[in-house]
Image 1 (spheres, one colour):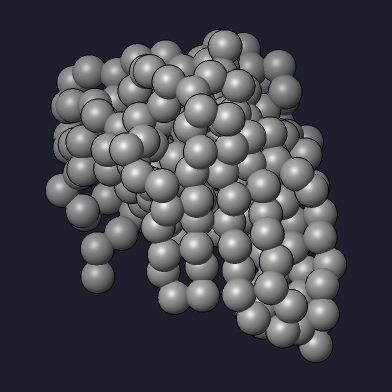
Image 2 (cartoon, chains in turn yellow, brown):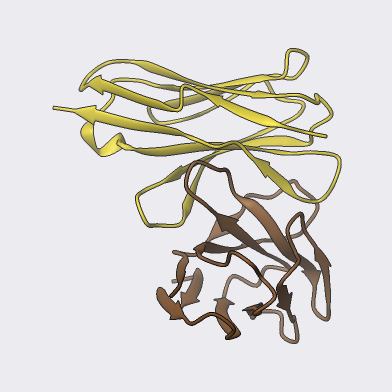
Length: 111
Length: 114
């Protein structure tokens, strides 16, 4: 059974820091991995999608990497801003037709 | 603007009542999904539909029912058989259900059982 874990569960950093969020999964047979952002009481916004054949994807200050063999993905946020404060979720598309989500990392960036 | 509309945003229900959550999309997506989110837990899949007039159970389908009579609509009914229905419900869609496509989410519906 595929399980997705995110560490840390919560993170608080000062503005301007570069930071890394971690995501691990137990079964490397995935089609893709997606990172989402969720603001309190809101739906999810897709940030990045990495296909299983890719090693990384970049969008602005965000960079996501994927290492299938070790079952790990990282989301790198450069020069963090207070507006980055949210919960970040990763999800893997396993050998079925549905996404399996991690429990998320709650990020707070203070001025 | 294309997107997913969920309604109502907040809903209160008495025990023993059925309630229906609406989900409408104008993205022309084939696949639609319902997830449940509880504090401290990841999203869990309730039901999904890859095409009109067809749907499959997810991991926690007991106590829920869905229909997919139109491509743009995928309503979720929370029945009285659902033992712990208080949660945040999220609807999503994707262009196809093959796994290669990004999911687009609605803003969610928060259900509270009194």
